[in-house]
Image (cartoon, rainbow, N blue to C red; front, side, top):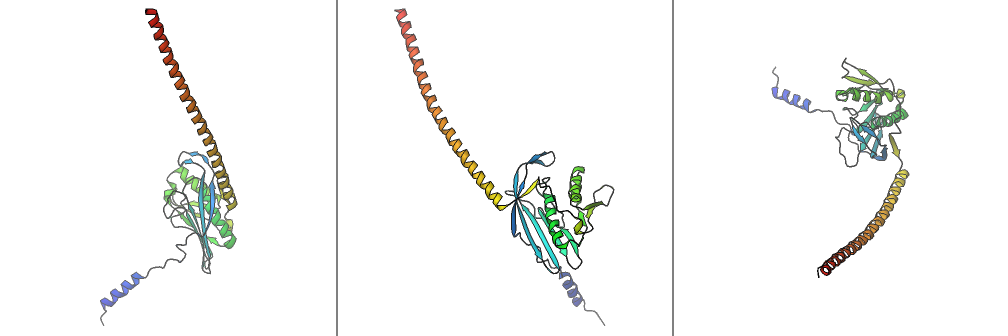
Length: 263
């Protein structure tokens, strides 16, 4: 009995074409939006200036029989970021009763050192505690690039530990690490409210109204100042003409006196 090599090749090719289908929720876009206010903070020597900023906070969630998902996004006006930045995913596996934080590239937030990392984690944890407080938390591998300096590593570890995670290092150089937590109920859903505030719709409308009113008042002041400047310009031109006439008269008088004296 002989094997058919052509049939075997077809079988191998068919097996290679079988790929894992992407989850239907993998590319969900945000459905609900809120406004975040970042308080102005002193300039940081590593991250630079930290002025007052406003950011759009997007949210979408799905609750299913096998999985549930919460995806949070941040969008900055006039600034583009990479696809894997400013996004946090919280996946719940109901069969394994397991909660995992994503994406796989870990949480990357821009702008840095403004309290946004803790804010996004707090929002994800609050949602998870509300629905799946008894679930276990999957270990999350921390990228080594977050530990490029002692200060960056300390800032990352403080952010995670403040939310209830435990950071475990896997090598003496503290480059490879992952964060763990026993259960969702052991995590904390608070953040630096003095750094990041959620602006309600009415508050945002009030802020816009006040800004518009202030702008109109400034326009009135500028117009009055421009009118005063025009008045001063006219007076200045009049004074210049008067001075010119006086100088010409003085020159004429001096010439006349010299002429009389020489006669």
